[in-house]
Amino acid sequence: MKEKITQTAGRQQLGDFAPMFAHLNDDVLFGEVWNEEAIDTKTKCIITVVSLMASGITDSSLSYHLQNAKAHGVTKDEIAAIITHATMYCG
Image 1: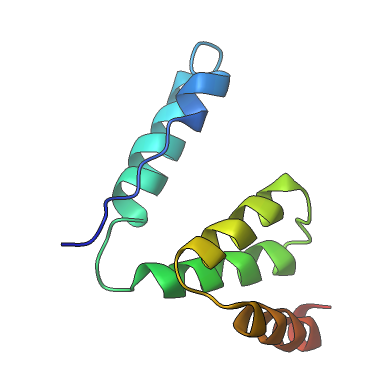
Image 2: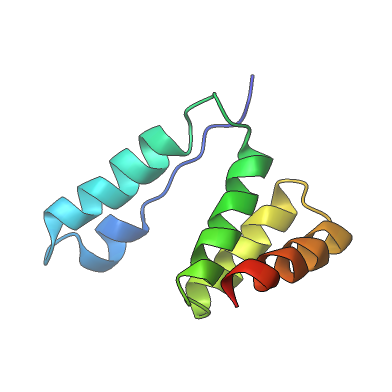
């Protein structure tokens, strides 16, 4: 059985101020979307890294998701190739 992805950052950081954001981040994005089984977690990690790059998001979110990709089996060589390939399309 695959390990379930969980997240509590939304509630921990913004739960009192923005409970709907906390719900969408923790329960929907990480509770449902990341745990949906049609795409394996490694592929979801790759898609997330490329999506962040394409959106111009290079802050701690990208760093977190690069580490998450590594933790889910994306190798250093694969990450380098993904970044290089995506750069040709999204700058």
